[in-house]
Image (cartoon, rainbow, N blue to C red; front, side):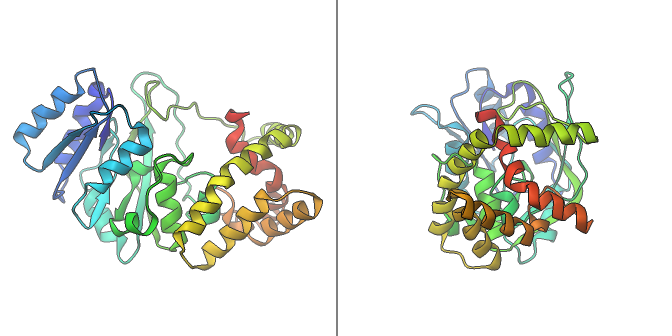
Length: 312
């Protein structure tokens, strides 16, 4: 668990971790310089929980990536579960995931958003796409839902300075090894509030007018959005190459990354052809209607930039 000024919501989360039916062998909490009483609350829990180990970043704030990678590196167990400071776990979260992970590298599950202060939430119960081609664009498996083998850190290394969040890197590494299992059950209650580091207002647009406006936006701003796509893949490609992992998923992701960094009409046509071949792996959930899947794949050369619209 990583903390920063989370005293308002921290107690329910710590209580839910301590109430697990499968007790963790250690609880590592690393604080990133809180000044709101978070540290005092952590010390209160540590005084009565020998398994709880506290660390405090004394040399300035590390940020989300730096704090999580540093905290995860301290883990001594064979498996690591990532924990946010303001969520609430189901009592059997660890037990369910420990049973489900099997020989896989990473296990995820549904985390259902909730709010107690009117912050907007949106629940999506579709089984998320765990393929590497999807996760290099936008991570479908939030860190707080993950249980993974500690060896995964050794296979991938950690880049605290990357533009990719730590959970994206973990999901991509596990997907590159083709070792992700998903439990279709809510195991984490994901608190949404304006003070959260990942706070964002859900966007809709399921009707035809919304879909049309979404596509028109992507076409109209294609140049600016494509610049952000290239920015992302300038990080993705060396990351994937550096891991040295071999699998069909990795081969496809490397090909796509190079296409996304290419320019010109011949490259554009090759990208469209690639998206058509791999259409089932591109979107949040698998599209089972062949014609709709084809259309969405043809348009993905434009719509893939929509994830990065806030940067233009």
